[in-house]
Length: 344
Image 1 (tube, rainbow, N blue to C red):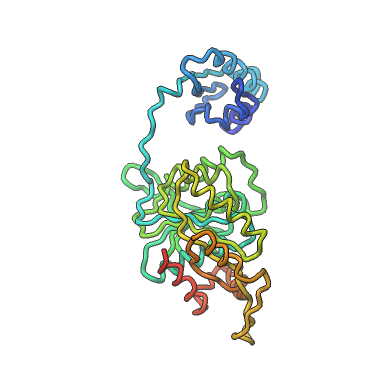
Image 2 (image 1 turned 45 degrees about the vertical axis):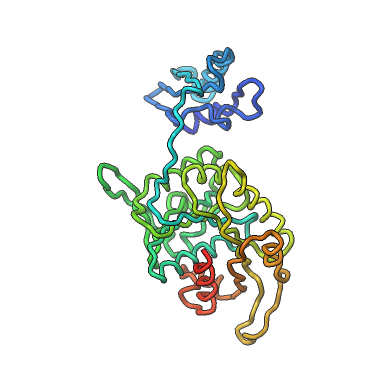
């Protein structure tokens, strides 16, 4: 039987430290140092307390779980470390960028990735050097929006390191998990696996020196958000929402997540997407099909900047499907994104 790291992690999710609700993988007790040599497996467990008497039983249970998953002939070596003795890493951003901006949404379907794509291209049109990371692990759409679904990153030698080379289109450097997975298959990963994939896209890529590094986050609040915030030192976050109340209720959760003292990322402002619909044949008419100015009112009540109100334009959908962001073709839309750029 082939043994691989994810098999080991899956086995260890069965194990709990006494009195802990989370398993030892979720609680961060499994060190990121799994080594596999044939049927030999070794890694470290971090004890939550100095010389904890419970660690012997945790180690024993871990070995038994791995053997159940990998076979009785598997040889398992586990080193126990004390959490108090672990040196605290000095936080420094692996990305050399003047501004690192998270683009988030409380719920899916509000056009967050469309806003991310068009904002990145609008910044590039203004002469800025821009990188865009598609961190939406479970629904990566940036490759299609830029027409680079078939791109497969090659390795570039930078100093003494082999780094992934981002795609580049419309002046924007791009990386997405979509470059590495079959678009016809669902990505079924545990949180730790998804988090490690995001870290690699940040830390092991040749992004170069940038003016803006935009991160298109998954919708909602999850451990992916916690991972990326831990890896990058964000300048601030933009939250995208449609005007209706059900979407704004989730915006509140997003703001509270970023304002949490453990995360502490400033809110640069809100974008009201799909704010109204204007038919091409009636350019002076506005139809508020998702409610009227809900995000604007919320921004005023909360004291958060409203960066722009972006209308529903039929050609936005068509442009997203054919891989050409609409901001390249529509002067009205470009004007809206210039508003955002000026305010951030």
